[in-house]
Length: 608
Image 1 (spheres, rainbow, N blue to C red):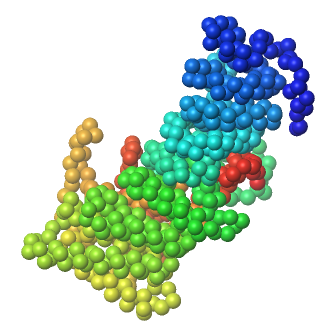
Image 2 (image 1 turned 60 degrees about the vertical axis):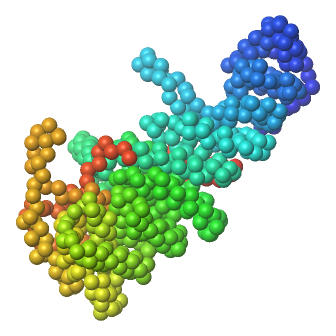
């Protein structure tokens, strides 16, 4: 709405109660007369302040901005608290002009101005009365948030234009103001959205912004274990079915309705998983928007983003044990081009084979290598073969070095952890990709598998079958037996006879268990459990498909594999990670009324 600005040339309204201009008030204050000065601060703090007053005062402040030195910081802090966001266009325009004048003439106030703008990156706090108790909460239903965010980013861009070094001072402020991870999903979503949006016009901050966001998301990820999420979802489904049965008993009127399962809910039953789901949707939408312009992939922008994400991967994601979902950011990005997927595979391969890297990181890299090869549909078979060639070549050289050392090699995880992880990556990849490798030309496929010399690996003194996860070992043995590539069961039975129980009493009592996961393995790209952000992950993801009866592993004593879950042939074998602190829509979910783009203004909520 256009504002009538004739009042700018008219006398101040009666609501303006201080005597003179800001310049006159500052002059009186300098001489020791602080009456008007204190009155000015009081008037600026009035919650009922009018637009006309704000504009008049801001014009006065601009006319004497060179006098607003550090001595007047309390007055400036009061001005910075003025409720300018969401006001009339005239107020917003005048306030931005004041900010540009202030940071140009008095750079001492730069950080204060940045803090003020960043404070508007989340919905404002409102007081809600529940049961006679005032509760402070965020106003998640504010329909003006898009335009408010536009104004904040306009102010930041203006400050950056006048003070090119703004980025050096902004990052600590963004870290300090990041909401606590237990805040509402909407609050976290808005803040992360705005961080990503500012990285579009301050590209120097993008890597640091991604590191900050992903670090917070990892805390959520490792505090919501896979088993906890599945249990919460199962309980929610059972509770919903019980309610449905109750309603059917009371009102059994819709007999013709379909008995199909209800659609999967968008909100996660696990509260931490729900927050993570929201943030994953935001981050994946950002990745898509950065890399695509008008539906076409921009290779240069995609490569730059890949480098930034890979840096964060090395620093945060790879060292974090048993994260379930955050690593799918790279999974999704690599799906845009085969070259990106191959670059990621080469990167983790270099970490795995590097003796200068800590063993724990080399083993984690092997987990990423095997899991990525097995689960990414967009990786062609020839790339899978090339990676298997590299892995097996390295494994055979490792066996050669042990055989040529003159010492008897033994099954020791502390000495040979990366070797065993590499073997498990090979077995896991073959379990998922052997069909694709044999399709089309069975003879050539079998010749390739036999040329890998897997029998030497399995029969070596290092005995990798004894260390790998039992489910992986069992399935690998079944597949290789069917195609007569290698026979593993004699070794598996011998290993089972030699497995000694481990006595543990740290849980408050004696218990005898068998350690089925001595490598402490986990597969980073196990099934994706989050609901909303899974929409773009699912088409890219290779789910576990049951083997034909001729390939099924025979049951072994003490091992029962559940076949009920959609994708869980490893069920019960992966480690529990409770307490360890270490997909994918192109726009925000409409039910959240989230911004549809993290690009430059304008921005609007997108409803589907």
